[in-house]
Every structure is written in structure tokens, then in C-alpha cells.
Image (cartoon, rainbow, N blue to C red; front, side):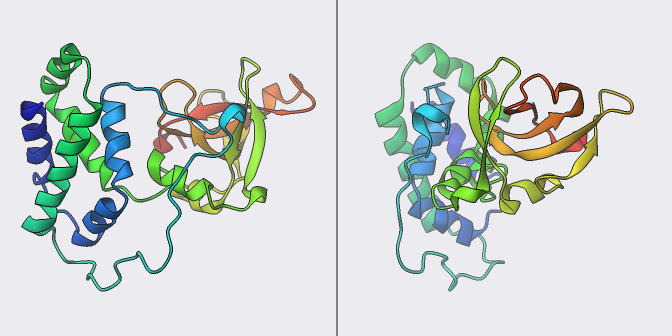
Amino acid sequence: MLALLELMNKALVAQPRQEKIASLLLYNEEKIYYFIDSLFNKIVPFNYFDQRIFSAKRTYGDITFSEIPLDAKLTPKTALNISYVFLMALSQKMCCPGNTEKLLSDEKNIYKMIDQLFEIRPAFNIYEYRQFINHAPLDNFREVQDFNGNDFIVCTADEVCEPWGHKSGDRVRNPNCVGDEMTIIGVAPFLEKGDLALWTADDSLRYKNPDKCIVGAWRTPEKF
């Protein structure tokens, strides 16, 4: 556990961080606990029909840390506080020593995941997506179906679609089929991996289920 904590601390200070985002991370420390869960492949809930809405802590008042300038760099005190939360989360969530050895051998992945902790856009970060959909209006969601007939819900809000380069309803060319077009529907967790994906409806599948939109997932915005 200490070796893994040391690696996470190295990743934390491996590049300049914003003090403001670090303060937001400390305020929403559940994000760190979710990160530790994902390290050990623990099951997390999705926004499918059995659990439509994620649980998210409701907050009141100004939690934007507007008093902290955007160009302020991570301070040693805040870095130590984050490291302490790392330690607390590891001590409560850690399991499978064999998996720990695998994690320690893949430093690049740990560095990447620490970087993702500081990603605050709900389009690309599963925790931020959870928080966003818990407060979004109901008209920002659409019921769809995957290729296997599984029903689930995607978020069609501009806040989660535009970072991918499109709005819900946009028509785009299918990069895998010449002349074929798709319609951008929305963003939701990928069914197997849990990271976020952009879900689109292919014209060639429009009649597979006349009552529901059939969608496929794109996980890299460069596809478009």
C-alpha cells in the first residue's frame, strides 16, 4: 500500500497542477474514493434503469473557490492534503495484493489516472458526469438501446456533447462505412469499461427497432 501511495504522490507532483482544481478535488473527495475503486476494478453503478440516477452529494453555497486565481499553482499544503486522502482511501478500499503488484508495474497508467482526477469536464470524467446528471433537467436525457437490445439512458445536454465536437442531433459521416451517416445522440458510460462514450445512431439500423433508437459507442473524439 505504501509503495502504491508513493507512486500516486509522484504522479500528483509530476506536472504543474492548478490550486483551484485541487481545492475542488479535496472538497469532493468522493472522487478520489471512486478513483481507488476503479484501480481495483470494483463494480460501480451506472445510470441504467435499475439505477437511473447516481447518488451525488448535494452542496450549497459558493463552492467555486472563486477567490483562487486560475493561474495559481498547487501548493505543498494542498498536495499533502490530497496525499492524505489517497492514504485514507487506500486503507479503506484496497484489496487483492496481486492486483497491487500489477498496478505498480504500470506507472504510466497511474500517472494517466491521476491526471484524470484533475479533469473537471463532465463529458470526459465519469465522476463529474455523475454530478452533472444528478442535477440536469429530465429533458436532457433520452432512452436508447444497444445492439444487444439492452435499454439505457444517455445524456443529450450540450455540456456533455459539445466537448466531443458536436451537439445532440448533429449528422456526421460514419468513419467505418463510406457514404453512411450517423446521428449524434448523447453521452453515457460505456457498457463494459465504465469510461464515457459518445453514442450515435446509425442510419443502417433505423428499422431494427421502430420504437427505440439503436446506438453504438465511440470512445475517442478523434474518430469524427
